[in-house]
Length: 391
Image (cartoon, rainbow, N blue to C red; front, side):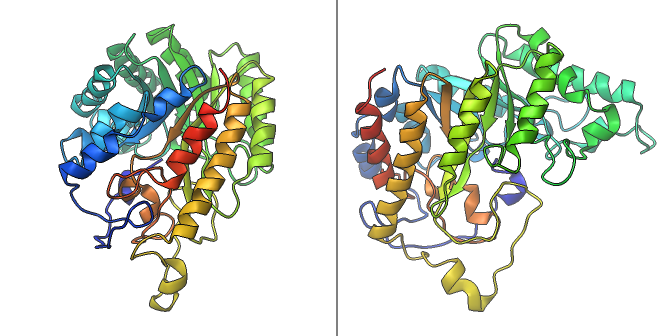
């Protein structure tokens, strides 16, 4: 989910301490080596489901603090945070920029991992030229559909056989009344843009796993809509193979009971479930979700409450974060036959989009590795949970 408009982090200098404290800085090689000595996380999940991480464009461009080695060591699935979104891949019609995506595939292949293509069709980070003519006026349905199909054919076709799973359509369901979000694709093509996108992806690579991806579709208010949409696609014989539950959660209220219902109900349709963008923020917010248009303000008087951990994460909060993530992974492991992968949305806390969403310029701690690239209590909690169950 880490949208490019949210990636400008406010520099923060923080004192480090083992496991509990975090910092933004280049990590000394001695610390990286120490981190790599930890038993690879992917070993614990082998035979259960793939364990993944989202990789930033900065990492792919060589602005690396050691996180690339973390990815190679601990994860057997990688997703591009932004590097494969339409605005990055084809900023202008016919001008494709594959360098960052190629690098991601290279990293995965070097470590024996797999790549998730993210994402082909989305209302955000999609250039306006898809929907406009040279005169600036909206194009016809036929032109917009042809552009959608051509984009998918070019991108999926380039990586045929190398990228075996695609988040085809992202966040098409409306949070308010009605089934579908009023996106430029819906307005330009019509409701069948989803079906056409999946068909185009399947034609470009018949062996690829095709996923519908969205946030909050585990929750009671939105899950029925997701089921309705997926059933419609299946009834139309659309090649959809899995549903991606993003899982942008908070430490105070991870919706595990509702998530269990979602796993059961999507699986009952014969679909795999993917946990696609998991993070568990520890900072307070009034909003649960991942709509990038959302913003919350933070006055100077609110700083102490809204951004309390600028000098490091207290031990007790780090432990609680680990406990909550373990509860989530206990659920995923219970349904390991139904789940294809679990992807963390970022590599370390300093990379997380939650530092700037829904409030900009905060210091959050939602992932398994801290800013010094050291594993947090959550890392060991989920590793032990995986090791405790059979295949």
